[in-house]
Length: 330
Ligand code: ATP
Image 1 (cartoon, rainbow, N blue to C red):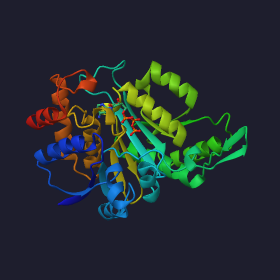
Image 2: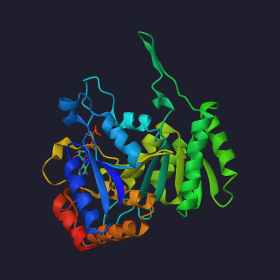
Image 3: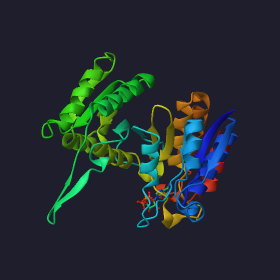
């Protein structure tokens, strides 16, 4: 039996992880969940929102499913999410964005995978106050990080039957930094003659995405553009309740929804578990459990097709009722 770390999070985290674990268990797949608490709730007892035991569990099991975890503001704690990514060197942020049945959006046929570099760019945190009226942030792009994220994107494309990997930069203005990212993309692409290449500037990409998103397949981007564009793509398919994600490194992978802990609806049994469920489905594919991934995905689609959905998608089904409906469709 496969052991997987489960971080059930805080806010709506426990409600949606209960729903998802129940659905996976009901599918017949046996998973030994190594449950690890983290976030605001453990600070009192353990002095940190991300205790070492959580990292050790992921390092041991290699795979984690993570519900949202809140980092308390203004208490001097570093973001749990950023710390996790750094400590485990989860260099690739993967966000598949695909239309779901019965979820009304502006466009049909959106099926985009955003691959975002997760470790450097303006997120390296190299900032300084030059004087009272001037601050500067340094954008760091390295060959090593750029090549490995481009390789990740092309490997993903090959493994998942994708046709094109499009690189997104502003290399016409940031000739050295984005220029280096582009150069790495071009070099890596030579090893994948079966995958089509495309180069686009980030401003043009944004316009094209809101006019005709179905022209895009896999996108690979440096960290900051990746952050912004992946939220845009989440909006194209119905918003936070359905936006899945994963942070993947050479050794470990953490699958998690894009949304936060939604404290405004905590404990009300009305959160949408779909984003976490889709993250879990991608996780099952990642560990080779494709049959169960498909079985659960089909049950989710059938449930949505029948008009059952949570309040964020215009329905009136509770979190637990939604999970039960999916289980009935398995
Ligand atoms: P954080 O700082 O933890 O990311 P946030 O407040 O910026 O939190 P979210 O927690 O993602 O962002 O919530 C944004 C809005 O989306 C809230 O109104 C929340 O209720 C809603 N929301 C987020 N996730 C879900 C979900 N799974 N189901 C229903 N509504 C959700």
